[in-house]
Length: 113
Image: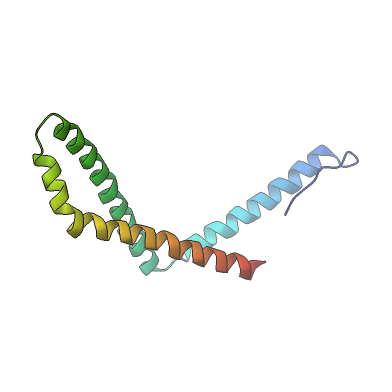
């Protein structure tokens, strides 16, 4: 919804109306967030830990590249050994969660419109 100010309208009334709409929307959003189920919170926590794994893995990869350039490839070989059992599933879970969330948000937006 787009609110447009017209010169014939009192600016204070316009601000009060916008502020009231904003307060109502934020109250509704807060109520929806309070009613989230336990499995959604648990899933969100898993995805946050997954993101931490990816961030730590990317930092580990950067450090292993720099050390590898100097002739010591020990950290890089450790990263290669962890690639399939740790980082591939983590990346798959991350991008799958993003795709599913985008689909659900798109479906919810269609229902609301």
